[in-house]
Image (cartoon, rainbow, N blue to C red; front, side, top):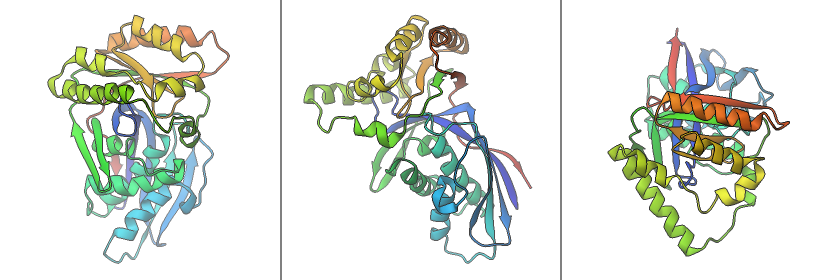
Amino acid sequence: MNEITIFAPATIANISCGFDVLGCCLDTVGDEMVVRKVPEKGVKISKIEGVDLPFESDKNVAGVAALALLNEFKKKLDFGFEIDIYKNIKPGSGIGSSAASAAGAVFAINELLNKPFSKLQLVEFARKGEELACGSPIADNVAPAIFGGFTLVKSTNPLNIIELPSLEGLYTTILHPQIEIKTEDSRTILPKKVALTDAVKQWANVGALVHALHTNDYNLFSESLTDFIVEPHRSKLIYGFDKVKESALKAGALGCGISGSGPSIFTFSKNHQIAENVANSLNSIYLKNNIPFKIYISKISTQGIKIINTK
């Protein structure tokens, strides 16, 4: 195999109560990437379509992640890799744009090298790209992109990712206002200290959400989607957040929150029909604004990155 085309999925991080530790993978929203072997050693970004991003490998998250992988590969290579990126996830959207590129690059190269690295190792390499993008080697987006489904980042040193089951038939509806909120900027508004009472409620929700996923308990899952610590601050950066959340819940959503650092707003629904109803309610809310937006509906992907074609 000398070339591989992949679908690199978008992801939802934090999932309300799980700041920096919980994430899930989307099925129909994402980028495409083509990675091929070339005679020239190293990593070259040869094409980027959809957005304006650096072509230099050491300034592009896909390149940085790929180089981290190659630095750990013990065998000597007499070839390099060329990467084409077709971006459908806007940077700064809050649905894992940088994670898709970083995770996609290491997944594809690992396939072309006959899978010398585990999924956990791929997350470690992809985190290097995330560090370039947002100043911190977070794993809550790259982990679900690589593992699929829901994931919990148990620890980062050493890295420990726990795969979680998904609820049967679960759909997500995502509202993406076409504004950019950088992760690094959105972190600066968060409090350095939180009240113990809020912390207790927050980690109780994390535990309950994990239990709900394991027991397929929609009611408990819904009750757990409350953020006492981060959302009260970050929601101020997203125009109309409170109205969107109220509308989504009235339309039947199980819960609503900020995806990643925003501005995207995610909701979960029991089935596709409810997800459509939620989409219609969000559409009616945001049509009243002068802010361009997109709405996505997707199942939760239990697969993660998908191989489209190989040569």
